Image (tube, rainbow, N blue to C red):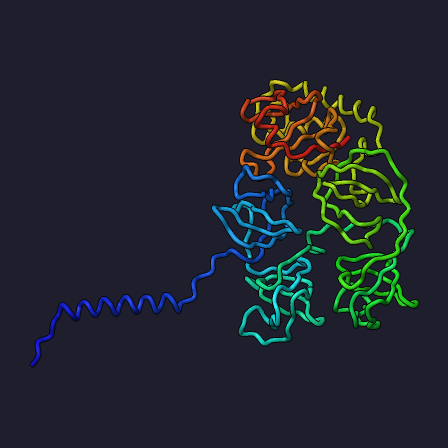
Length: 450
């Protein structure tokens, strides 16, 4: 009987073990990190930055509840896509969800014979195929799959084949409300065949008719991703993607260049009506230059672009009020605030026995006959937004917290680049300068109540 070499058996066991591990590693499916899907902003206001670092340039400042698309992560930051911009947000202030429902925008297919499926995975049935250049409205996200509208039905396509190109609607998109019907109407021309005219702004509404490329319709309004139109006496809605505007004549009264600031998120449109396509969304506090007016709309220039913004979302100079009147009222507020210089800082304090930052603002305004909210976060919505360059005595000034991640401080502007506030660091009510590095870099907004 041949003697078994135990050392040889051991060597073979080691080799087989290594081969088995390699086989498992090659065949296994790696766990997917939460790097794709949707996330919701949980902070009061969160910056979208150009780099995954606090020193990155601020591209936008998004309010709580905004839904963004997550495409990756890096060193404590999510890489995200929002309204045509790609950037980074701190993971600490985003609530990640692999699944979300929202009108995220329109995607353009990259690839040939791409399968559209009934569910978010390759195990679901194929409903059809799309090709290079085809466009689909994106209505949701489920992991790496995008929920789309395909042949008037909900369907799914892998996000690798459908980059979202431009956000045209969604729960966080601003909706201008016009007080009266449009004075001017726009002509639109269909750009596809078999385009449905529907009874309402959605694929769930009844089809009134189907028309081919070149058909002209009169655009009378807009609702999200849909144009309200009339055609041969019929009133209905057509998906914006299939209706190109043409032949519109816009009457604009020229104005001297006037600085202004947006008072809320608002669309910059190609013309003075919600029937016109949005070029981009301007965040609250965006500085623009007004160059003309058409009805209730202002023509503005921003970043080399020219477009129209609805008047209710703009603050022009003194916002239609007398600068002298506002200044007088503001001076009274400043005088009242100065009475409490030296009063000690007390967290939660709202009386001369002790103030915190927002408590001082709250108390002073009440003493002057104005009712405002109590906390700094809530005060960041009181009154109306004014540009930093247009601040007047008595305006409320709002600052980020130390981490620049949320609202953290409030004070009252007194003029000359200075403000009065209850400082936790100073331990008392005091006057500070906005040029100080801490306050200059953490300035968030100014609000005018009077």
